[in-house]
Image (spheres, helix red, strand yellow):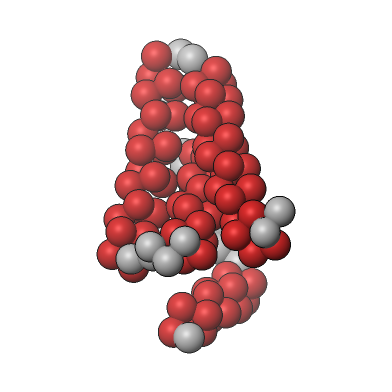
Amino acid sequence: MIGVIALIAGVVLGVYLSPDVPAGIQPYLPIAVVAALDALFGGLRAYFDGLFDSKVFVVSFLFNVTVAALLVYLGDLLGVGAQLSTAVLVVLGIRIFGNAASIRRGVFGA
């Protein structure tokens, strides 16, 4: 329940304050969002499998976002930022769809 209230409060504050993202961070934001979605779907899968642990979820969430952003930053330093961003998106997309399929099978039995 606290998580739902925090989510609603965050959305309301985000809409009301309309924060600006600094230009230096903008290339990393889409990757961070996809990494966060990967952690979210992984948490949902663990919940439906009866294995959810909030500490593991928080660490996974923060670690996924940090590692994905660092990989893209490293790619920018090496001059292959677009290629490494695409690779990160593909890997995280595969994980998201795998977790979504597992969730679907658990919920609908198909």
